[in-house]
Image 1 (cartoon, rainbow, N blue to C red):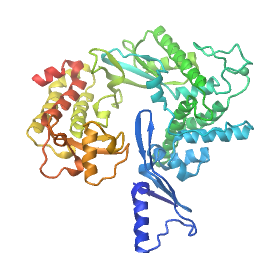
Image 2 (spheres, protein in one colour):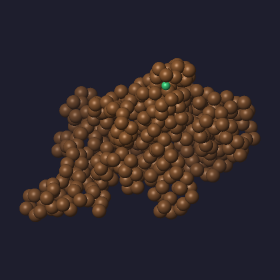
Image 3 (tube, rainbow, N blue to C red):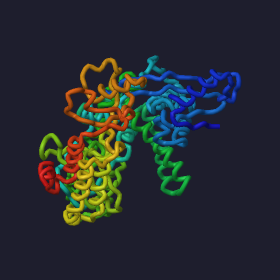
Image 4 (tube, protein in one colour):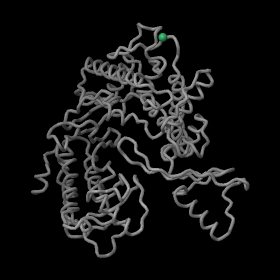
Length: 520
Ligand SMILES: [Zn+2]
């Protein structure tokens, strides 16, 4: 008995209950007539420089209420994924739906400790402080990165270590209580020289063993099945993937019950060592490494095909003891230069098409949430044309067509023939409306909405259109999307600049810089 809603926590259920109370009509949302609806307050909190708004909870007795818009795990793994995590963490489904995978991991570790008879630190963890692996990589430079060699390439192979960090934590027995043990002085972490226990299996690896094994099973079943069954296995393995990712973040988080910074350092030290070993194996086989990022590497060797990369993956797995897979072989791939430093590569900024036609794009406008639809759809159309090409010669031949797509939009934009939906921009409030001191677009939009009676919280999204970026009066510069009215106009040149910038992103390596695009 499950009620799925969209916006049930923040709006639907509180509103329904208020209306029912006002009308004097009993509203029985619970199956159990003696219980009231359990609520949780909404909150805004800061996690790594970003303010996030989380709606409260409306939880029922005798049936479950899950708000699709207020559940990270549901959005990633749907119902099967949520149930999988709740079952493992022992956290009630309605609570698990509204909490992080980090809390789930903590709960699994506590259960393991209770089962083992281990004492548990009496310390409350703060769920908003943990870092995900991606954040750690950015903030701590924990993993190894080789700057990409800017340029366009053909027949590049991408090899990815599977769940690298959690796999290493399990394989090398990394846990708060196994690092720096006194009984195994000969077993050392590379570079940083802490000892790691060989005699006792750590608590964190014991929990991970179970998760890794389950996920591997689900992934195997996913490949053996089809249709609805396949979807269920995929949802479960996706939910577990997020638990595994957070397990590494929690290891380095000092407020976590089973976290310790030295354990976290040991993982990143092992990961650098493993990636170096992988690089050596690849180079010994005649490959050139174009880019490497934490647990992925992009390699090229003249004439190499899929089977060659598969052979290389087996060699690397043999050398490192960690499973690595061929993510794919690219028909063509471009490592894009930095917008700020000419000619310099940026990690994780590339676009390419695999030999099966699948495409992969990272770090550019189409992937970002802060560009208007007109920029996104135009760049997407340009990329689609380019990705239809089988090699770089075909891409170059198709450039006139690609440029025409950009020009078409620019003409339409300057002729005033675009809709507000194409121009709207979304931004998130970083503080209370009254606390804004400068006339940023957030501030102008938020104040304007506030004057019209909107209740805004830090972390909430607001939408606006640029009406005249350089206007004297702040209120003339941007206008909230919801208050657009019929007398609106837009700043065509500012939007044209965004379009040309997005065009340059995908065309610069083919000889079309912003200056040339503007000129021609
Ligand atoms: Zn030991």
